[in-house]
Image 1 (cartoon, helix red, strand yellow):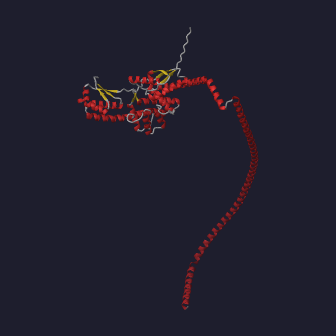
Image 2 (spheres, one colour; image 1 turned 135 degrees about the vertical axis):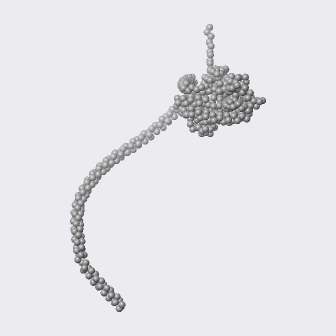
Image 3 (cartoon, one colour; image 1 turned 45 degrees about the vertical axis):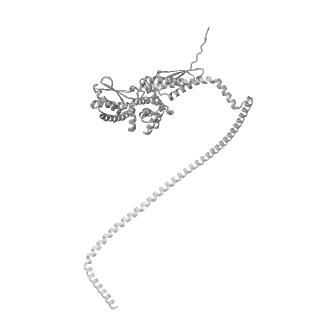
Length: 520
């Protein structure tokens, strides 16, 4: 406790001492600090006065703004109340109009219901009348059957027989007249279209022979071509598949063969060997193989030129090569590729005239004989092979139908297919387009006449117009007018099924009845 008192006393003494020191210091500095404090106080009082003035001004402005705001609010509130009153008045008017319209609609609905009920009543009356009429008609038919002693079906059959007996000649004449008029009209129109197409399309005569002549620089070369003991000419014929004819013709040899491609390869190889001068079996084999490759490239080029000429795009190179092979195939001496391009030109004009699709017709004409390019390598008719080729290369179905139907192996089902078949007949039948040997020509005429004479009732048959027409004379006692028309169709169908011929053949059945009278 004593120690605590000592500590407290010491602290009090220290504080007193410090107070005396501070008092002395403050007394020495007091005057200066007092003056500075007074100046600061006056400055603060002046600032406080300014702030009070500003505060008073702000309060005055606030009061003024409050007064103005209250006035503006009262005006806005007054306008809003006025607009609300006007809107309520409009809504009331519209509500009144709607109520009026509802009343009108209710009246109309009631009127419609009345009319519907009236119509239902009338329908019931009509149904009742129909039943009465049906019953009356049935009673009338029964009375007629009782009187005539015939049933309704028997009466119809008897009436039909009487009408047929009485008017058969008239109806037959009318039908024949209408058929003749229609046929004359359509034949004339078809002739005009085909004549215009043929007149507008002019092409060279596309015939090919079965031999090729190769000119020689001198007759001495013939010995080299034959070779020792005929080895050179034998090797050449075996490699090319053609016949080499060496006769007394000066400075020329003949390459004979039906395959144009082989003849062309042989011609190029022979010219190359003659120019080179080295004619021996090994050299012949080398040159022939080289020429075969060149002819293969030429086939692709021929196919490309044909499609470009006709405006056809998108065919793959393999199909173009097959098309080009047609350049080395013939039909009755007519070059098939030239024939197909000529057909496409004629067919396009005809399609444009009748409103068919020209592009389908052009493709159909170009590809119609594509099967002939491979018919000696693949089994089947050229039509079947052509269809398979077109399917393989994804040709359009419309074009495939033209290929399949151009010889009417299947029924023709499109205008484009008809045009392709017509263009084929036109191109093959024009004078000079095709040729055949005299023996084949005479044989074809005999076959035509024998086919026509094989039908019952035929007395005579004559092939005329170079086999383009066959005239058939029939027995009037065995063949009547209706049977005459059927006979012409049957003969035409048998010719199509059994004979091979270029172009078209007209079957003309003639029925003559001659009655002689003697005046004395």
